[in-house]
Image 1 (spheres, rainbow, N blue to C red):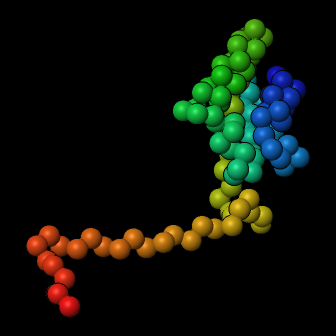
Image 2: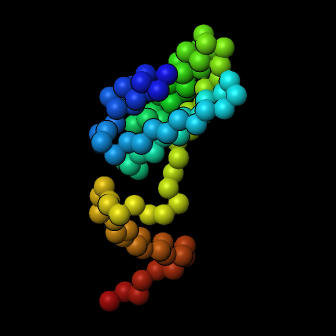
Length: 107
């Protein structure tokens, strides 16, 4: 199962060398923890979560064939990463709308 996950996930993301897949085994239950760059998380989740749901369903089906359960979790770091995928975006301030009824003085 881990080889399957490793192969599929590396095909989806832009930085496969930064991916960490950890396997925690319990009694008939396996938890896979996935760490990625922030920019790759969206690719694994997909639109409306469809990609991650499909991967989890395939993982669950493979585990059920062996009489086990398997779970995939995406782990987010609490500490900020030392690299950034893009520069921060400066936000422009929008002007406040003028009140209704006020008019500019004639020049």
